[in-house]
Amino acid sequence: MESILIFVYGILTCIVVIGIVYGVIQLKSIKENTEEAIDDVDDCKADLFTLRREYEEKVDVVYKLIEEKVDVVYKLIKDLDSKIDETYNHSVEVTEEIETKIHQNKSKIDEVEVFMENSKKDDF
Image (cartoon, rainbow, N blue to C red; front, side, top):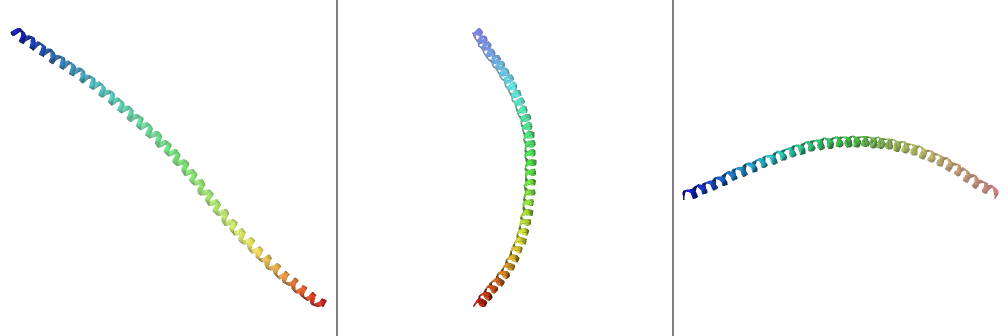
């Protein structure tokens, strides 16, 4: 009976040793996987910072382009406003000249009408 007990203790000891060895192997594997995961996270952080920097640089370039385009549009609007004012002032001058000529022609037409009436009266 004693030999069976020793045999059982031996088997239990082997099971415990196998369990400890398996646990150590699993812990080592977990540690390696954790280190790989940490390295991957660090690589992802580096990539994220690189992408963020590139994004910010591109945003700055686009912002500067937009500013330049807005400045050009503002200048064009200012030039257009100036041309509209110039055209308006010129049209006012032309309108005044036309009104003056119309008035002059009206008076000439009135003179001609008076002359025609007088000449008809003289004919009879």
